[in-house]
Image 1 (cartoon, rainbow, N blue to C red):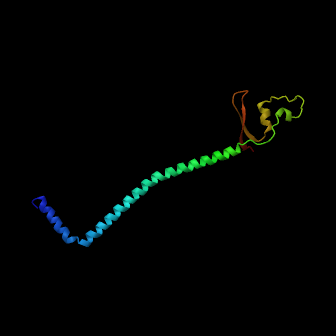
Image 2: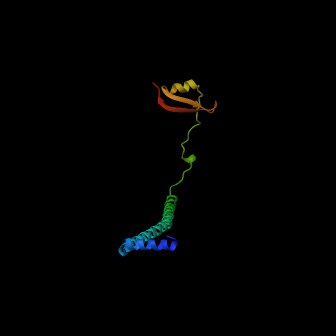
Image 3: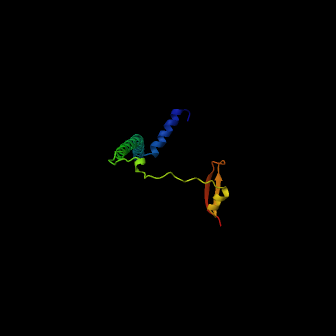
Length: 135
């Protein structure tokens, strides 16, 4: 093996002896099938990446159009006579209700055995019921 040409000749002689023509044909066929499958997969993947978002966009547009139609129908005016609140309210004399201010203890006494808290600044407090019944 003095130079590269002699090395290449040696390899080709070895491969000619080992690899028969049918083996070469089989390997070539398998290689072509594998390459064809890869190309098909790539093509299908590319088409899918384009078509699926377009279909989703079309479905969203159809859904929006359907919602607009139902909203339009729901918003149609009904032929119900409108009566003002003043005309519909029965005549009531002036209310005699006067709010009563109670202490914190009186408020808590209204809800016995209930976990509660007053939250906020004085005069703007809110009653928070904690939801647990105390024994």
